[in-house]
Amino acid sequence: MARPKSYNRAEVVDRVRDLFWKHGYQGLGIRAIEEETGLGRFAIRTEFGGKEGLMLEALASYTGDTDTYVHQVLRARDDTEAIVEILEGMVTPHPETMRHLGCLMVNTSVENAALDSGPLREATNKHFDTLRDEVAALLIRGRAHGKVRIDVDPASGAEFVKGAVIAAMVLNRAAGDASGGAGFISEAVRTVRGWAETGQAELLGEAANTSH
Image 1 (cartoon, one colour):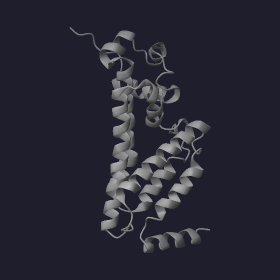
Image 2 (cartoon, rainbow, N blue to C red; image 1 turned 90 degrees about the horizontal axis):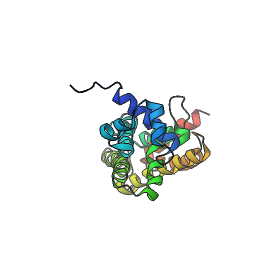
Image 3 (tube, one colour; image 1 turned 90 degrees about the vertical axis):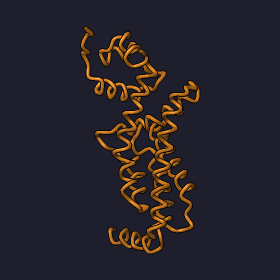
Image 4 (cartoon, one colour; image 1 turned 60 degrees about the vertical axis):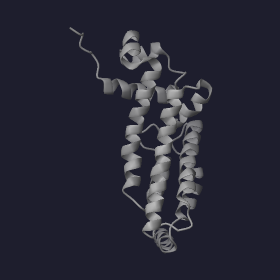
């Protein structure tokens, strides 16, 4: 009879995700993982595929959260303010997030430039490509519904937003502050709001003026 597991896999993955987020892939050793999770070296190797397997599950967990709080928001909208909300959220401190550490995907992508792990590269690229595709789809819907200027190219705009998110997260990590990339995002927001059809942009401007 197989020995029953004495741990909750989802809880272990979430704990390891936060550890990787804080220390990085290379900075987190197997011994530290054992101490922090209670997993044995044998279980890490056979049940999770070693350290890289744990990292891949951690990245999958992170992507699941991103789908809930970012992708689903974009899918439900057709206006540029949805993109603005996502961008501003990246640099808004929140007690339940670790934004001061940047983005686990960005951190891993940067670190993997030296590691050159195919599976890690595939996971991070897929994550950012999904963000790009959701933004592009929103811009296409927005153009069709008269909320986004027809001269805005969805593919280029989506690449811009993807780059803005990555840059802001690098700035947050470098500053050790969840608002480290706020200045950059402020300019990115200005650009994104400029994609709105004139009528919508004027309404937004009037709303901003009346709030002061």
